[in-house]
Image 1 (cartoon, rainbow, N blue to C red):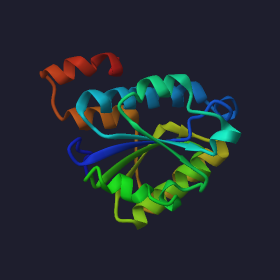
Image 2: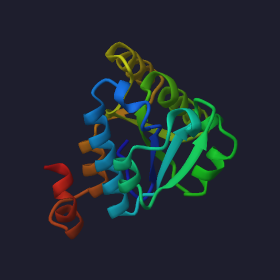
Image 3: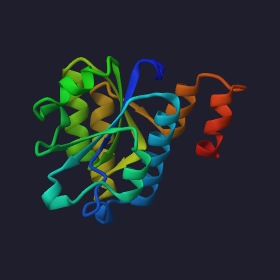
Image 4: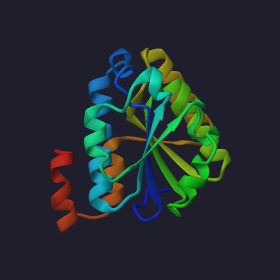
Length: 180
């Protein structure tokens, strides 16, 4: 199944100030999440950003805040966004069936969110190059488990090209800086 911009939303999970320095390959994860947020904004794909226990982990990283100017932020204390009261309803209000998911930590909040949203009836896609954990082993175990559960494993460029659907358009030219 292809990811369609008119059927999808973007959910960025817990890319926060106090957690990011401990994340394996965090610069790549953050850069790809920013690319996804920029692409979503330019193409009219609804964006959502979760923040786990703000008092303990601090706000989203400045780069995420800047790229997510059109996104809806929400705080959570459950590891799974889907378990947080009101969040599934919030996502359903976007009237989109597909959830493009990225963030940290892949083996905790991202994994539990993916499985919870899948159980709630969404088609979920994990952006593997925009998700990580403190250790590579935990990241890989999460990807393996999610793949086995039927979650689509994709990359940032897959998402952007599938949202675009074709070249030779103004939208394609506008998003080229995110792809190059």
